[in-house]
Image (cartoon, rainbow, N blue to C red; front, top):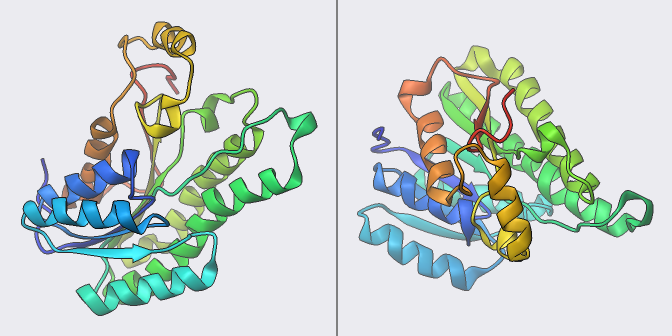
Length: 248
């Protein structure tokens, strides 16, 4: 794909799914990768796989919804790698339910992790990227932010907000040669979608022109591109990876 040799990256929500595959893909292209999530055991296993690919890995136990944990996590990354070139804001949770009956704690939890958490991480990344006058921030949004989804008003609002955040920060920071983009995956085979009934999965496939659900590697490839030098003239963009399910 695209060489990331010598780059330092941080991926949140790296313990499984898209985040895990992204960390491996970045490592395969030569980046050293800090992997952040709440599950330290899964991160330790991933770190071993990154090492096999010849890159350095740093395990960062971090809940992005906690501003102090985020600050501490970024400090450890800078102490280990001395810089941060790439941030992938991938950490996300779901607390699904109809809007009429949604509990406030479920609304607050999703917004704080999926949107505010990305804001916390972006603030920390910008502090070092601005000084370096270089950087890549990639936010993982979702197809549902573009087309809506019943029973996920909190998740849709958070991911839609993430797209707005992407565009706003891209404009703020462009003069410092830092790009900010989003990837909007469609329905991807991850632990988050594994819980869907098979009937629902088959119905989804019928709505996807390419006839299949995506894989984490499909999304990781798009992220690697946006993290590369070849994407240096792209900012404020939302890259759809959805098999043609939503055509903007």
